[in-house]
Length: 206
Image 1 (cartoon, one colour):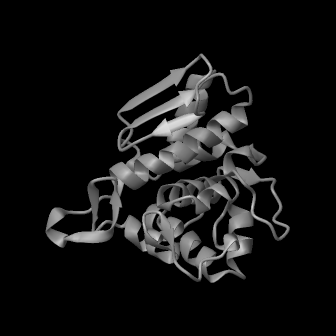
Image 2: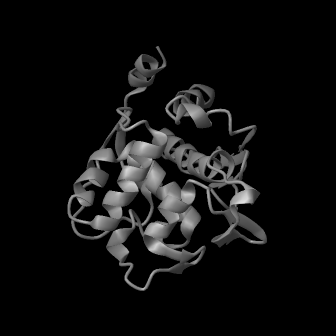
């Protein structure tokens, strides 16, 4: 059953990034972390009981794959102020458009950044969680993201990034988010309720 779940979720990812994931592991013993991902690898904890949470985890971790392995820059453009440990992030990396909305460096927020400028509490941890939580929120809680973006300039820019850079100017129609924003950001996007519409991705593929 999990194979179908992951296959459906893979097909809602941006087309240009669907081949980024090369090594995918689901471990059926309890893991320290529910999910881990890098440029081309993902490891998920298959003991997560709820399918919706497991799917949301896959989409969140796919955000890391896309950020690190699909949206990349070139050495010729020079090093930016951002880096992944010792690995530089180059000036023409498309992800920089997103990072620079709220961040000065990989782990230092701009002085005017506010908690409500991040889709979740976890998103405010660093640039990578900001990206991946934002990606999952865009795919699974799109209406809430759009509504919050109406009154928040930082979120409006983040929403526009996912829509225009990754989804060809459109919002994915694969899920109906059931979370409501009441002035305080959720801690973790992967725990928010939503209704999945698997038939929608079939239409997209055709």
